[in-house]
Structures are given as structure tokens and as C-alpha cells.
Length: 142
Image 1 (spheres, helix red, strand yellow):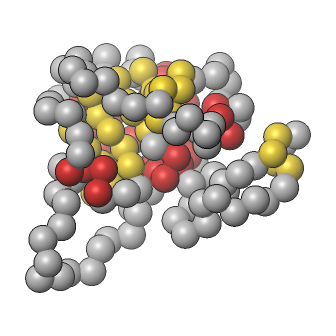
Image 2: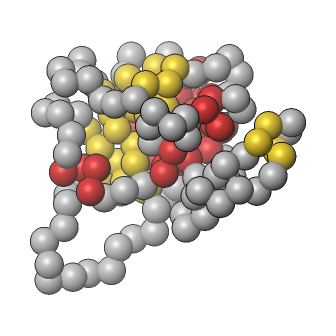
Image 3: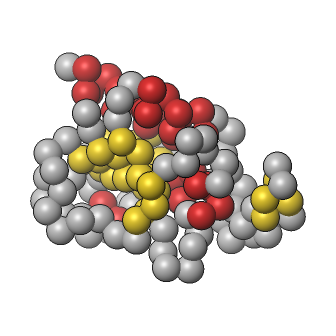
């Protein structure tokens, strides 16, 4: 069983986070949830993996927690010594550089344009959360 930390940036549509969109399914939606994101979290949990949303103290992850049934855990940061088999799924490439040792990372979002400047290296890249979940499930099955 893997522990998978999900940042809201990986669950939200790129470029529209922090945009109030009104009420979605009876809840205030602070971010627009990407199509398939909630199903991806459900697939992780059905496979026996632990899904944890990383949210700042402001509660940005609470939006997503309300949509997942049964509710997922919400934590404010990665542990200093995560257990083996821990994943971080993020939409922010800088988070890959600032992770505890042993955490495997997946960057979710469109491919970054090539540049001559050094960039943070994530272990894997996926076009969306569904592709990231499939990668985690495949790696964990091996």
C-alpha cells in the first residue's frame, strides 16, 4: 500500500485555481476541480492506497475533501520521514525540489517548454491526475 499526497494544484484545472466559481453540489467551490480528478482519487483508494490531500492552514484542500466519499485525510505538510512507497502528486514543479528524501514525485500538467535554465526535476510527469494515478498503480503493481 502506498501513501499518496495530493496537492490541490494537481486536482485543479491549470490556471484557474483560487477563482471562486460559486456553488458546486451544494458546496462553495474555491477551485475548479479537473475532470476525472475525483475518480482518480477513488481509484487509488479502491486499490488499497492511502490518499491524503495537502492543504495549507487556510483550508484550500477542504474544497476537495468535501467532494470525496468517504472523506480523505487532509494534512498541512509532508512528514519529515515519510514511509517507503510515498508519492507526491503536484502541479507545482518547485515542490519536487523541496521534498523529503525517498518521496517519488509526479508533476501534473502540460509539458514545460525546453529551457537552458535549470529546473526542478520531478521523477515523472503526467498530463492530468488520471494519468498520474495510472502511473502510480502501474509502478506499485510491479
